[in-house]
Length: 178
Image (cartoon, rainbow, N blue to C red; front, side):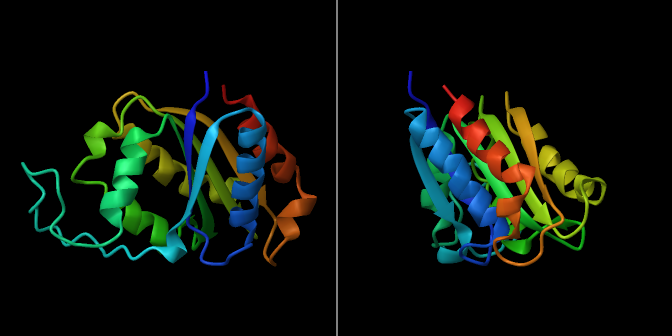
């Protein structure tokens, strides 16, 4: 049976290294016969959580931006792929802002298979804080299962990730989803 896969790219650079790994994941996933949508956070308008708790009881944020539609997609997907470049040993601000804005409905993002993609000039051991922060988010999602973590290490300039094992791994992970 085909799965509904949502890939969320937090790369601020179109064609940046984490964005390229998303494309590889999508390519493998589509070849496996799944329905795939890739969302680039850089193209969306998502404000920061204001901690007003206006969503309490309503499951609707008081802000009128692109997060409502993205949150609907996250709830409906079978598989989530979260991709980010690593900035100062953590996820970039676009992904953190999006995660914070799941507050109104995060408990509805349930029973998902989740994949993490991170890219950095640093090595894998220095990217562990980023992966740990992503795991922290999925720990809050009922029934979420992290299926793989792809480390695009040692990459800085656009396109360098194409010459790493992570490039093939992203494609292979996408192909495995059934």
